[in-house]
Length: 335
Length: 296
Image (cartoon, rainbow over all chains, first blue to last red; front, side, top):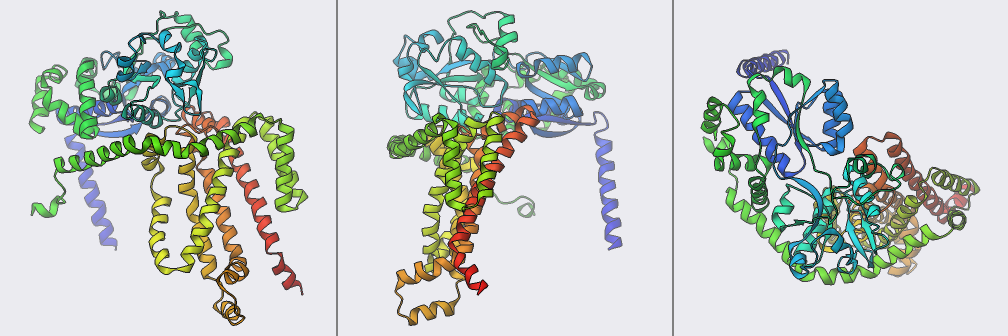
């Protein structure tokens, strides 16, 4: 028994010794893999490039906007959040940045993304008059609420997400209740997705909140509507629309604010990144390429890792711009 | 050598085609039968909407009186009635009345459905070994399969809201009552049954006169487990758009509102304990002849 113990201890120390030597250049990095497809693709691309290109010891940590941000802010781990939607965490993130705990290394890792209110393509084809949100609001009869067919159903953002407040305040701002609408709370992202799939598969109409880039948008060709009103100003948005209902007595109609997505890293990672640092700043996925990748993921039922390999082998023209020539060669040789 | 290092798995493209075929099959099923399934469940949906509205829109003193009355009819215990009313008053005082009523609505419907389906199923299982062998693995699946695996297909079939929520709650909550009814009846003493047979009791008399009364302690343990598991599913159900105490719990979880989460969580616990104590007292009263026998 004692021998076995020593043997195990020896084996373990030998293994960690080897690992330590190989990865000394970069050290260990933990990357948050958010639970939606584009972030999973991005996290796995980062993983492969950091691991094969720069010799880091990379681990992937599952996450979600709020829990991951909180953990990075409070505990300094994981090290990297590739696709952090900062509208939901704007104030605490500003504070963390000013106190030097977190750093933004890229202010737009994917081009052409955004949140808004969407329709399915077959609805737009059948009702070409529905060009803006204002047009849709006149026709609650086209979008019957699941529990009360006499009202229109607007699919809001899942409970507890930051966007729920904004959607519900816009619901009041556009006086949708008076116009014959009721909110449908989908409960979770999976519930929201399933409600879209159901409507698309059965040629039913669907109206609600969603965001891009996502595989659902790619798969069903969801179209983001113009709100028909301009952006109602920063004061209205930041001071009212994103606040709880009791702090937002008079919301004004407004188009959705420009969504900001950052790649955020922790301070401790910033101090030890070395040559990896400017990789994150250069890494910008073009929107159409990202949507095509997401649709591919949906079709192939691929995981983030499969998609990352597919992306790296299909689009070397894009990602080789992000890394040093040496790192590019190393990554290519491992593919 | 390679054979032993890598598990010989199905080819990637075969596997993909296999998964795609299942998904396409489900989509076709949903397109063909979705509409009629939805209209099949529509009366249930309308009833649940009506029941929830009734609970929410009735004046709260009236609801309290009815709840107190039901607790009295079930338990005949003033302490329990007092405790029940106190719980609901505290819940209402902390602003959780509407959500509690919504949860109460779906949970009472779910509990009645589970008991109504579960006890007959348990009796059937007790009667035949073959039925028991067939149903037991199904119950295992129902209890262990992660709920989202079947929730999302159900939502794609029936849409967001109460009916998929009810189905999810029942799938998870029905197994204990089935298992314990079956067990209780099987545990009834052979000799007692022999005695019944020698008096010429027929199947019905044996079942309702002897087996079920003697199995009651187990059956009520099953009722208890069913209620507890139904309430544990409240949060999961709210992830597909069921109103109730689960919604603020979800909000609390994703925003680290500790107090909000704890308050709503405790309200779920309070409802569970009330449901359970009242039903257990009712069960005890049904078996009161045992006590009488012991006291002789």
